[in-house]
Length: 478
Image (cartoon, rainbow, N blue to C red; front, side, top):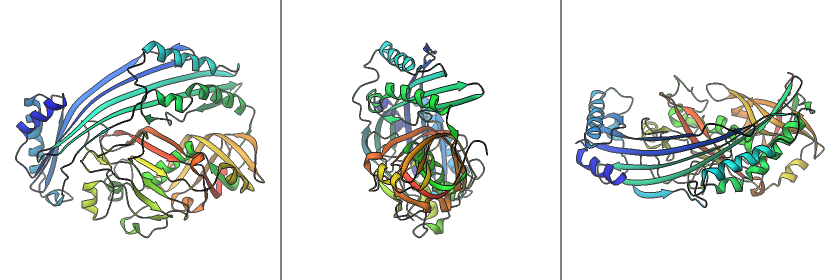
C-alpha cells in the first residue's frame, strides 16, 4: 500500500514551493472484561492521507480517505487552492519556512507480537486478572482492558523526502472500586497510564495480573482510612502522579503555538512568554526536564515528527532554568526561537500542531527511602483521579486516589481523598528532592486533547518520585 501511495503522489504532486503527503494506515483492537464478564470486542481501521502545500507565502492542506490517483489529485488541488487563497492573509509568510526533505525509518520494538497470541489467550488473561481482584466482599466493580494499536505512517515530499515509521502501542487498564455503605473508593492504573510501545511483553513488565490484586486490596483498605489532613506540608509524588503534574504544568505551558496565542480560543494560553526562554527559573536547580522521543519503548517515541523534522533528545528545563519551548519547525520559524521535533497529528485528517511527545523529568540521586527520611511532616500521593487548572496553565488543583502520611522520616497511616494545589510558576521551585533510577517509571496517556478540530494525542511521561516542600495539602472533607 505504501509503495502504491508513493508512486501516485509523485505522479500527482502539483507545482508549488513545497508539497508533502502524510499517509496513515491504523488498526486497533480493544478487549475488555467487567466483573468476570467479557465485554463486546472492539476493532477498527483508519486509513487516509493528507496533502500539504506551501505556495506564494500561503499554507493549505486537504485530507482524503480516497487514496486512488484521482482522490489524491483532487486533495492536492484543494490544498493548492487554499494555499493561494490565503496568500498574504496569514499570520506568517510561509515562503520563509524551510521544510526538511527527510529520509529514514523507525519501528517500535516488539518482543511478543499481539497478533501472535490467540484471542482466547488474551481473554483468559483478563479473566484471571479479574478473578484475582475479587479479594473482598467490598469489591463492587472490576474493569480490565487491553487496548492495542498498530499503525504505519508514510511521509513524502515532492523533492524526494521519504520517511516510513511503524508503531505498536499497548495501553492496558485496570479499575477496581470498593464500597461500604455510602463510602466508595477506586484504585486504578491511572486511566491507561501504563501505556507503552511494544507488544504483549508490556503486560509482563508491569506485572498486570499482580497489579489487579494489589489495586483491589488498596481500594478495600481505603474504605477504613482517615481523610487526608489539611495543612501546608511536604508532598512526595509517585511517578504516576508526577505524570499528570508534568503534563499539565510543564508540557502544556511550554507548547509554542499556545505561547504564540494559537490555542487561546479552545485550550487556553500560557503563563510562559517568549522572553522567558533562556533566563526564567522555572523550578529549583534539581529540575531537569527533557523532550526525548528517542527513549526505547516509551509511548511517544519516534524518529521524525509529522512535518519531517528529525527527532532528537533536548533539554527544555536544565537545572531549573527554562531553555527552550515545545515548538515544531513552523512554530520555530514564526517565533524565531529554538524548539524540538514535536509537530504531530493524531490522524490523517488532522493537521500537525505542537504537541508533547515523551516529556520526562530526569532522575536525580536520591533513593525513595532517602526522600522519606527527609520529611518531618508530609504526605505521599499516588495516581491522579481529578484535576483542574486554569487556561494559562498556572493555578492548579489535583486529587489522588491514594495517600500515606509521612512523619519524622517514616511512612505512617494510609489516608484517603488526598488533594493538593499550587501555582505552576512557584510550585516547581519548591522541588527539594528527586528520586534516582530505582524509582523512575515510564508512563503516558493516549488522551491529551488539543486543537480545533480536536485531536486526542498519545503522550509519554517518565519520572522518578519527587519531593516538594511547603505545599497546600487538603482532604476530601474540605
